[in-house]
Amino acid sequence: MKLLSLLTAGFLLMSSEMTFGQPKGNSQPGNPPDRARMMQNLKAHPNLEYVSGGHERHKLDLFLPKEESEPLPLIIWIHGGAWQNGSKEGCPPLRKGYTDHGYAVASINYRLSGHATFPAQIEDCKAAIRWLRGHAQEYNLDPDRFGVWGSSAGGHLVALVGTSGGVTEYDVGDYMEQSSSVQAVCDFYGPTDLIAFVQTPGYTNHSNIHSPESKLIGGLVLENEEQATRANPIEYVSEDDPPFLIVHGDKDPVVPINQSELLFKAMKSQKLSVHFHTIHGAGHGRPGFDAPELNEMVLKFFDSTLKGNSGEKEPAQAITSESTAQAESRPDPNERFRPSFEKILIRADKDNDGKISAQEFKASPDLFKRLDRNQDGYITQEEHNQLFGIKD
Image (cartoon, rainbow, N blue to C red; front, side):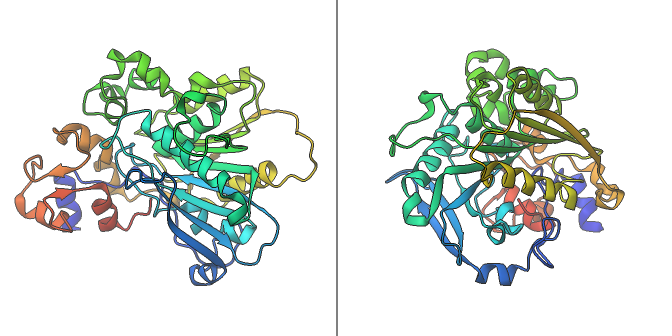
């Protein structure tokens, strides 16, 4: 408790990334499989380089069930972290046992905003998808059954992958003969319209130069509207987009729910297949996103879009649903005093490098030493997550 008080005073926080429970029990959707058994039943291919001679972040991990003989549908996880943190190591589809349900699972890294500004991030995501299609036969993947799933900044990128399937300007590099389109998109609370985002009451601090959105596009959103518009998934919505499942909490303090509402409305106007699920009382990934009912909803979505055997396209539907975050899933009372990591960076990260230096840290030097777990002179989101035992 003393450490928690110190953390509050020092503005260190619970992660803005989605929290998932540790796997346990059997492989039903709401009860992920035993990790040791699951790992025995899959083939892991870590750190595959999807851009030859590229950046150190141009790597992905691929996981395949051992016993499958037919070409596999693939779910690609794209991590969040405000486009400036995070990594492929946190892979919810793997932890939730999707390989036990007959899927291959990939988790990709991409260049962060500290490495390169937009469109580097979407270029990398599309390059990874093309690489996976180019190696589909080698890894027993079905190139016609690719889905993407991501949260927060990852939600933004999967939504952009889904809506920009026919946009060629973001396809650069190798395997250009392969498509970067996908057949299903699961977007957890991703930004979709940066201009509307930064003007939303209660979220206007995202319009300043230290915000993740400004760092992504390389300048203030409202002073660089053309570049911001290029980054908006909503800009590319068209009649050939794949089915979407969109999930957002109505108490999200980081990404306003209007981002998902706007995307749903745009897709509905194009008569696309889209399901928008609101979790009442849920924040930015918690509580509510670890509920068995939501796990089952996501699995059924991918089963219906990637495993349908009829050969006929189902009629497009725009539907909404809702649930309520259960009280036992809510954070402890002290959490309301913990600002998001993004908000900490906005206030403290003066050099825009996505981490907090000793010079930028305003609390005591002793507290900084306790938080700087690897003693490299910086506090990162990963170190914060390790401290609180939070998964990406």
